[in-house]
Structure formats: C-alpha cells, structure tokens
Length: 343
Image (cartoon, rainbow, N blue to C red; front, side, top):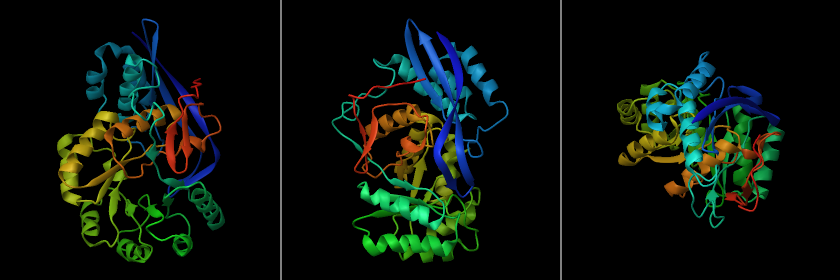
C-alpha cells in the first residue's frame, strides 16, 4: 500500500464570521491511499485556531502516517490520539479504499437517494442586515431549524434578530438554536441566558469558554435554556476523561464534530457515554470540504438520530468539489445521479 498526503486551501464565497473572527479561507489536508489499483481518500479537516491538533508538527505527523500506513487503521488511530483530524482522515481513507466506490463509505437508503437527513440552517455572524438577510433566505429555503452564531455584534441587536424570527414563526414552526462559541463571561452568562429564554430557544452551544467546568456545571443546573457542549469536548482524549467531564458538567446535549474529537471511533465513544446519561447529541461538520462532509453525513445517517444535524456547510466555498450532496427544503440529500469531481 502506498500513502501520500496533499494540502488544499478552500476559499469562502464570502467572509464568514464567528466570535473568534472572520475567515476568508480554510486549510485542509487529504490522505490518499493506493493498493492494487484502488484508491482511498480521507480528509484531515484541520481548523487553525480551534483544532487541538493545530500544531507545528502537523505535516510531520502526516508524513509519519504515510511512512507507517502498514500499521493499519486501528493501530494508527491509537497512535494519533493527539491528532483527531488525522485520526478521522485515516479512518475515512481506509473505509474509502475498502468500499466499492471511494465515496460510498456506508451504503444506505441515504446513498441510494431514498432518504434524507434533516439539518439546521446556519446563519453566520455579521452586521444586523446581513444576518437578517441570511435568516430570511433560510426560512425561504424550507428550513425548520435555524442555528445562529451569536456573541460578535451588540447583544441587543442579536436579541432583535431573534425577536424578528419569533414575530413571524412560533417555536412549533421554527426551532432556533444559538451558538455563543464561549463569548459570554462567567458573570454575565446567566443573565443573558434569561434574556434569550424569551424566544423559546431549543438550546445554546457553549455559552462560556471551555475549561470552566465548575461554572458550566452551575449554569447547566440553573439555566432556563438547555445547554450543549461543543468546544468543551475538544482535547479530551481518554474514555475515562470523557466520562468524568460529562459527570461533572451534566449538560443537556453534546455536539460532535468528528474532525475535532477523534473521528468515527471518538464520536461513538462520546455517544455511548452520553446516551448512558440521558444526554442528547447531534453531529456537526467542522468546515470540511465535501469529501469530509460526505463521510460525516453517511455516518450520521446510520446512527438514526432524527434531530436536525449540523451538516449544511458544503456550499460555503468557491472551490469545493462537485459531489452528489445537495440541500433541498432543509434536508441534506444524496443525488446519486450526480458525479464526484475530486482534484
């Protein structure tokens, strides 16, 4: 078996804002396997500034993987514990190599175009007018669940945007999730949660920064809105540590980004721990190209979670890869008549 890797820069159609700043491009890496005339493709979806494996030796570790590909998927996964995006790339590449088609990793009614995945419509941070425009577009596109990133503009304006939605759509018609990306201070968080509760929100992701375990635990006990952990899961590698974190904080939901938390195996560990504790969960892509998004969508479908998933990021880039994934009426569909064009 021969293994190589390749860097690829994805360009955003328009600058995309989070509480950590504006992004115009996103770096990703592909792991390519070749054996007996077959090809396997995996995406190592690194997100600079957020991924725990955003390290100076990242490319060096990819080279090590290529030199040690003979170890196989499971041994490599164990050796890559501190490089979750590469763990996922390795899992993906081996599944791709073994599949009948390199992009059909988990054949199902989804990949046969017989079923779809309910997703949320993502509204990016920006000026009030831009956010309102995005909200109107998502509603017109048939989404029944909208996720707004908050914490970057004036909080009163963000409350105004939520008010705008609720003036036209009640909670039974449109589910609203918000993602603060840790933007609230520990002191103000509970006050802001009470202000947000007026709008009957489904949940709020990561109201305060990660690693404030005691305060996050208090918030989960006293909040008027269900709290979902997101960044909090990043960098928690060991099974015992995952269990300890969930027991300490007792969140209402956890959000799983396979590129951040150890790929398929890492995600399944979190799911098993969460379900044992009656904690809800959903899966979200982390700005991967359509290659990574495709793998995440196919895994997600097999897990049979009927909540809206966070898989609507494929249309963000000018130079993404043509693929069968499409968004129709707030659902992610796989149109098997459409072909892949990779590299």
